[in-house]
Length: 233
Image (cartoon, rainbow, N blue to C red; front, side):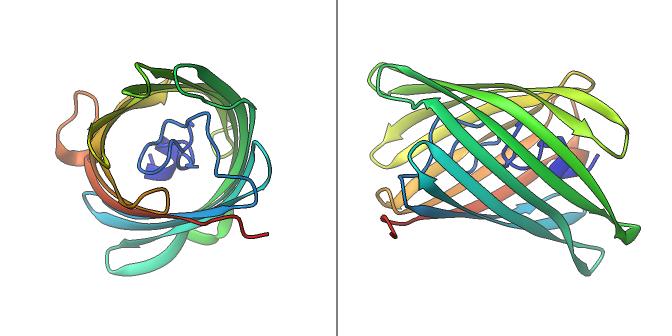
């Protein structure tokens, strides 16, 4: 299964995507960027036989609303090509606050040009509910997603889910852990570190992931950069 489809369109179970409980998580959170502000989430993901280069710009045109449009280029067997395009909208009904909870709704659509035929576009529509909870004055933040992904190529709909956590370690450094998947196959897991180079503006991260009870065939490593703007209009 293609990496992007497995992670439910980037950040989104859910992957997508995203697509995101702020890079590098696939499990989404009940947060959006500040109103009239934008962000760029970018990362490189090294798989067994390929490397993905992602860029997902997103903006908040209104309070509690975030729109994302982006995609990826994959290098496989020495070739470069567009492999994923996605668009997503996230609306919050209750934003996450310290020692409280938040929830919302995400809907999106992704296209995956087939590797064997670039002119053939396969589209997947998805939707899910992100729920987040802040515990112990933000010393532990939990995320849960539940949704569905319609696989157009296979003419079926899969239930998707994800559970994740954010734990501050020291200063600007966070530990992130998560597991996610669908009701038809073994789940994935991912763990990593996230660090603010400039608080609330520039963030870097790195992760390791794999499928549960699997050897090295589906493992990956990623490094990412997230940029956030002040209000732009």
